[in-house]
Image (cartoon, rainbow, N blue to C red; front, side, top):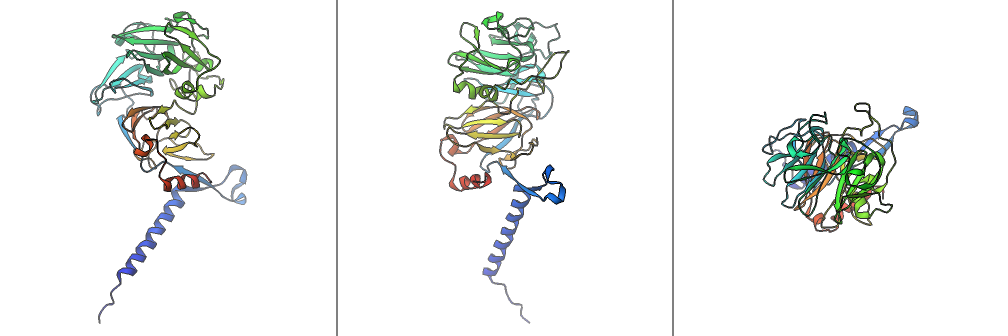
Length: 382
């Protein structure tokens, strides 16, 4: 008895049906999650769908260095970090990192080699000087780094309540007390006082400082004069993150030797990190609460690039690499543009530097693909 052959058309239809079922299960399980609001009273209140918005498939996230915590210089594959929380790019493309819990400023060259630029690794025990040869000085939870036109490096030495400059292998206090002392006064150089200065931005030949303990934006001009301007330019607010956009006046709690200290130690406050400006007009920033990477452009709604978030739900930290819809971060707190469609992210609790490769349409300043725009609007309930 001859067996009846199945026609190719039937096989094709069956394959399409199976793929549709798989896609439906994926959407049901990974994009929507059934949750019961606390006020619903369990089963009597019924379940509510909470949309989960995921990043974009054409964005690629990879761990460039780290995984510790630890401290080690050398090739990119062997370097270790402990609480990186601020980034800056030098003229030659080298990446500067405020390695907060190692109390050091580190550099990664274009070739991938890691070296220590400043800091002796002690958190201000009084035995190391604050000023002097860079590798012998005592930085304390540095939380900001910036570079000026001459290549000088400025550091927010958060735990020592000062701003210092690294040039020609030496560290010199340029604003704030040359001995650990906090305050809130303006004035020339070392007569001014800060309280836990953090994120830095070099804009308009001036250094702008997010002064966390005073919930204020401070300015250090070319002569070292420190002021607290009433009106802060918009580029400065964007460059400094959420504190620059909306100073909250939130009291910084915590203790280290009986004194208030930012929590977690050495990490800037605020949900939104400083923004990396792309040539295409997009700004890239990290959302610390949701552990995701976002993008925005003037006049447009923010766009989720990498990670996952749910409305009204706390973010879940992770250190997964891969496409934007699969990747995750663990307290990302700084983003900087490295050129060629690349953004570097300081992943604080992941003890890593993450490299994010962006799609060409974003670096060119174009609109997202039409299909992606429709999916984004649906996920936002539009």
